[in-house]
Image (cartoon, rainbow, N blue to C red; front, side, top):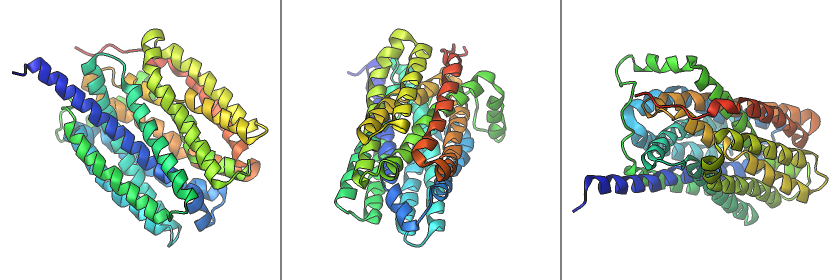
Length: 396
C-alpha cells in the first residue's frame, strides 16, 4: 500500500518530468522560429533595423502577457495556464508560417501572439519549477532551464537540417508548432498544485499583485535577469544573422553557430546546480558573467568564423545561469512566487523589447556583429547586481 509520503514523492517525480517537458517544448518552439529568421527576413526584404522592429512584436506580446501572468497563474494555476498558452502558440506560429507570404503585418500579428503565449507559459512553468525545487529540497531550476536549452538545440538542429534540405518554411513552422503544443498540453497534466498563495483570487487580486513592483529586492533581481536575458536574447536573435552577413558564411553554417551557442547554454545549465550548491549563487553568476563577456568579445572582434564559433560557445556558457538563478531568487518565498516571478520576468523581458531594435539600428551603421558589443554593458550591470540574488528566507 502506498503511503502519503510515497505518493508525494511519486507526484513530485511526475511533476519534475512534466516540468522538463514544458521547458523543452518551449525551447523547441522558440528555436524553430529563430532558425527561420534569415529566410523570412529575405522573403520580406528587411534591413537590420526593419528586422529589429519586426522582432519587437515578440517582446511586445511577452511584456503584455507577463504583466498579467502573475494574476493569471495565481487564479488558474500553472497547469491550466501552460495548456492554454500551448494552444495559443500553435495558432500564433502557424499564422507566421502562412502570413509571411502576404507581408509584414501578418507576421507582426503572429509574433505578438507568439510572444504573448511564450510569456505566460514562461511564468507558469517557472512557478511549477519552483514548487518542484522546494519539494525536492535541492537546486534544480537551472536544469529545468537546461531542458529549455535542450529544446532549443534540438529545434536548432532540426532547423539546420530543414534549411539544408530546403524544407519550406511554412511546412516546417506549422508541423513543429503542432508538435510542441500537443506534447506540452499532454505533459502538464502531471503538474502538482502550485501551493498556498498569499494573493487569493478575488476581485481585487490584480491590484494587490501590483504592490510587488515596489519591492527593492524584487526590482533588483528583475534588472539582474534583464541583463542576462539581453545577453541570451541577442544571441538567439542575431548570431545566425551575424555569421551569415558579417562572416559571409552559408545559411546552414549560421544556423549551426546558433546551435553551438544554445548547446553551450545547455551544458552550463545542466552542470550549474552542482556549482551553485557548492559555491553559492553570487560567486557563480559573477564568474560566468566574465566568461560570457570574453566569449562575446571573441565573437564580435574575432578574425575568422572558427573564432566566432569559439566565442559563441563561451558566450552561451557564461550566460547560461543568469535567467534561471534569477527565477529561483524570485521564488525563494513559495507563498509569493507567482507575483514576484511575474515582476522579475516582466522586467527581464524588457531585454527582448529593447534588444532587437537596438541591435538592428546599430547594425545599420556598424554591422550587426559590431552592434552586439552593446551586450558587454549589460553583462557589467549583471556583475554589479549579483548580490541581489542571495537566498531569501520564506515568510512563515
